Length: 396
Image 1 (cartoon, helix red, strand yellow):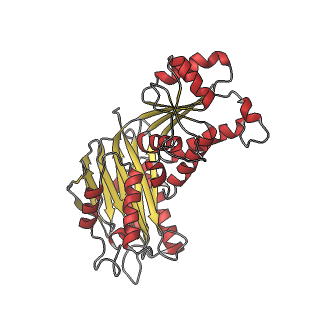
Image 2 (cartoon, rainbow, N blue to C red):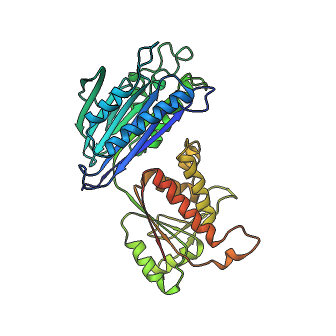
Image 3 (cartoon, rainbow, N blue to C red):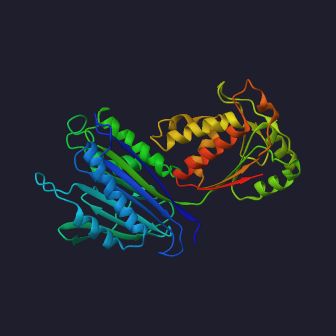
């Protein structure tokens, strides 16, 4: 078992005037030792046309393929089944849904399969890497395949044809060709970008090229091979005061960065470390988010429930369309700092949640209570799981 993991992100634009997207992405993670070990499968399907029919066909295609592969059928079996069952449009003589499959096994081996979709772009150290492909005929369908060994920071970018059509008839004569997309990514790539950030960057460019009125459903799906990065977050004192040393010892013994949320909790952490708790002088003025503090040996020290509530807002937006990226990516407040650590850096997140009831929260004039804190953590953990993070929650 290596220390690498596969970070997956995807975002879509609906065709102008459509309520549903004709593209669909399905992602499956497996950590079972059997069935050839750990794997991540991402399937991007593009339904013919747009609207309800395209959405249904692309959803069915991606779900069928990902389910079959997750249940240990060979890639050849999966492709043969879906390729042989997809109908062909009598007018256009093309399949009702095309697809791209990227499968990463044990974070060491990659398998890429295309059926009538643009070829996957592979970045290695931020530059385009030309991998070798072969073609294979399954039934009447021509499938393009590739297998290769992966390296840390390898980034696989799959797009639907809405991306290469961006700008046709508006800002570009022939659309945003694959070579243009590669050039744009290479010029704007940063090593620290997550898969979702790269997707958002590319999709925003497509939206701009379409002049704000997408002429086709457009989807970007990215898989990035990265090193595991644990993050530990502590919020609230334990239910029993006698458990403070145990809770603090377990928290600070964990590898990775450390976040402490809540005034009382910060005081206990400072006492355990034998270091002063210093109130920071804010470099910004935001009445909605309390200022941060400092403890030597702790990466972020923030207020508790209000700050975590803001992080949860950012997390819910992140798993949708990531429109608030600019706010938390550049913000200096506690919520932005925590969001960057949890969304961008973390692969494994350990929550240490104290169940003590804060007397200050029992004021009937304050909309804060014990159940709210617990619900916030549960919702945040659920959002982070949707981002592909490994989550562990410990209560004290």
